[in-house]
Every structure is written in C-alpha cells, then in structure tokens.
Image (cartoon, rainbow, N blue to C red; front, side, top):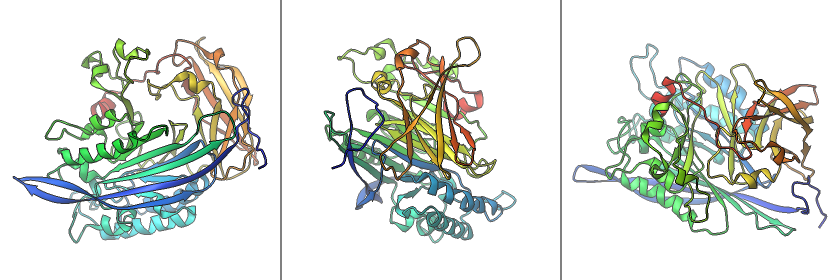
Length: 503
C-alpha cells in the first residue's frame, strides 16, 4: 500500500491511518403505567441501525446544532431564511449529525394571547427540513429534532403534529430518549496504540424533563425510571475497555429548569456520574445574554456553595480535587452550553470532537450568509476546558483547525498574542499546513509549535487567532480565544440576568 504523507506532529513517528466510520442508532420509546396515582414510564427498545460515514479526517468528527426555530404563520421569514441559509451551510460543513434542540414551531396566535399546535406551521417545518436535506445532500436520518415546550401541546391526540411532521416522528423516534453512537476505527502503521474512538450522543425529549405530570408542567420531576434509563445507556459504554468514548447529551431545557426526581436524583447527577463532556440545550434564546454556559462538578469537589454568589460559571474545586496523584479519583465534571435561537438571532453552532476533546464555534447569520467557517480544535479555549484534561498530552500534539469554505483555501495562518503588557501584541505567526491525505468531509490544517514557550501560570495570558484567505482574496478571522498550557481554566463571570437562568 502506498504510504501517505502527513504533517510531522510527533518527532519519530510517521503515521498512516486506515479509517472506516459508521453511526449506530438506538431508538427507545416508552409506555405509560399508572400505579398509586403516579405515572411510570417503561423503556422499550425499538430498533438499531448502522449508517456508514465516509471520508476523513479520521481523528475528528463535527456536528451542527440549531435551536428554537419557532416557525410561525405570522413570521414566514423564519422558515424562508432557514431554507435559504441552512441547506447550503450544511452542504459546506458536511456534519456527522444535525441536532435541532426544540421549539420547532411557535404555536402562538397573532395577538400572543393563546397557544395551540398549528398544523400549517408543522407542514411548513416538514417542507423546510425536506428542502434543507435536499440542498445539503445529507442523509435525513442524521437529523435529530426534539420537542421543546412550544411543541408539547396535544401529545397523543389528534393535534400531536410532532409525531407526524418531525424527522424523529417520521423515523419512529417517538420516545423520550434517543441515543446515537458515531464510531471511528483507525489502525496505525506505526508504534502507536489503536485509535478506535466512539462518540455517544443522547437526546432528551422535553416531555421527559417536563416530568411525570405531563408536558404542561415544565418544572416537574423527571421520573426515576427515566433517569435509570439514561444511566443505563451511559453505563453500557463504560464497560468497553480500551476504546475511548466521548459522551454528549442534548435537550431543550437548561438543567436549571429540571427539578429532582422523587428519590432526589437529577439529570445533573447522572451526567456527573458518567463525566459526559457536554450537555447542549436551547430554550433561553439570547434575551438573557450570550454567556449562557456553566461548568458542573460533583459536590464533593466544592469548597462551599458561596461560589455561586460570585456569579462565576466555574465552580471552584477543593484542594483535594486538584491532587494529581494516582490515588486521587478523577474529577467528575461536564459543561452545559445553551445556544442562541434561530427565531431572532439566526444562530447555528458547529461542535467538533478532536481526540475526545470538545470545541465549538457559534455562528450568527443575522448579518448574512458566510463563505468560510474556522473552528480551532487545539489548543483548547481555556475558558471552556474541563479541569480533568491532561493538558500535557494535548499540547504535545499540534495546533489544528477545521476549515469549511465554498471557495478553495489559499492560506491559513495562526497568530498568538501576548496580553501581559496590557494590550495584545503579536509574538508568533506561522502558516498552517493542510493534510495531504484525501479528506472528503472537511479540511483540517495543522502547524508544529513549541508549546513550552507558552508555559505561564495565567490561563488567559496567551490568545490564539486564525486567519483564512480563500481564492477570491476574502479573509476570515476566527474569534480571538485564550489558551493555557499549564494554568487553570480562565474565569468568566455571569451578569445577574445570566446567573438568574443558569445558576
């Protein structure tokens, strides 16, 4: 077999990879049983399905999230913009999954005084999704749409239009829990360990977080049976030794909207038990702020609850939690990332999982369509990095970025700025190299760097920015983001409004 050439990421290794990819679906539904006045939900497995994902790069996958579309007969521009913008954008991005986290239609009267399911809006939603799938060229089975609170009216009745017109409904994914596994298998022609990775995505329908009393009780109690079902789904992957797995959940409501079960358990408890990487949600739009993110840690790692009242999204671990000895248990943590809405903000998110580590890029289409997207995956943004990450293994590898563009890329340049003097000044500039290997799902660029030159106790002294220039001479700059080689996570504070809904 002909040997492929790669950028030199590790001295002494010449890496050749042979990948194949597939997605494994597990669909679950529930049946209701009533006992002593309490509704119980029993999980029933419906079907398994495997879908092949073709093309590289082999070490990274990416997904797209959209939320709070609110298609409305009174605001037809929402669906028109969705068809015009999202289909071509998805064709350029070519994600492995597309997650739509609730409030697919609006259901409000023109005077905003009444709410009910409107079949015309659901037909518009179905037609829009058909159009987006056709324009993007993506298999419709990789789209997952969940109920939001606006989609909950009429469940089980004649006005349960979600079951008829949503993508999940069309594919029989009508239960409260759907799990999807993206698997990447890589074998190396070098003295490196097997690179098999799995990525588990668990979708929570809003009727589950709404609780046992039905979808109208948005702040109700999730049942212990359903929490056990999620726990079981996550647990079955823990038993697979030697195959790293990244666990991500997605739903409509932020976790602050979900109460405890009857046995005083919560979604947060289950997520912490299994140290998922992230929980993706919507619901809050952008009217409460754009900084609706929260870092969750297990209670035994907290110093005290007074940290919440400092309006900081990072919960401070105890000194014992910082112990890096072999005897110390791993820190249980995950990130909760709410995203903006399509309704007014025309927002989209691209999230990448590179060697098990998660990065994301928020996109705002209010100002028009975009020709190029740039998502840095290493070094990680120190504001949203998990404290349990082995920082040294990350920075020994490379700088890397995924670039999506409708025009050929002529150059990708990485720049690092030092903020110690008080204002950023450029201290490093290097051209990034595209993978020589045929990469059909997206373009990944990398550059060698001396990470030791950026050792500093401050988590936000050094900042990274990427500039991409296409064949038309158009320049695209990534967000300027901090990174840290050996410092703690950078701290970002909430406003009072952000704290009110997330803290």
